[in-house]
Amino acid sequence: MAVWSHPVDVHYTCRGLLGWPKLHFQIWSQDVHGRNELRGYGFCHIPTAPGTYEIDCPTWLPEGSVGERIAAFFVGGAPRLRVEEMVYSPGDRFRLQTVSGGVVHLQLGIIMKDFEKNNVQF
Image (cartoon, rainbow, N blue to C red):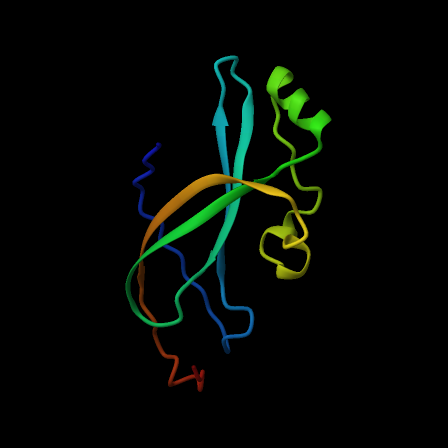
């Protein structure tokens, strides 16, 4: 388990819910030999209403072939996606063979301003 307790302040502007922001994660670690290894991909939608939220975002890795798993065991380097947009596009992601990578726990505070003024409907 690793704790990254650092506030992130992000401001978005939008004209509607189409294309509402998502959080996209890549979890990396460093092994005993100093190599950086991918430990998981994940994403979650940002809530569309103001308030404080606790969100658990599951992460996963492509399973890879038997040869890739053996190479990852001896040499390091887990299988990776060729196209990272697959993480948050539902059509292609459900065809992947994956293994669990853990959970990212988020505490989000959402503030919305001037949505009514700009005619943004929920």
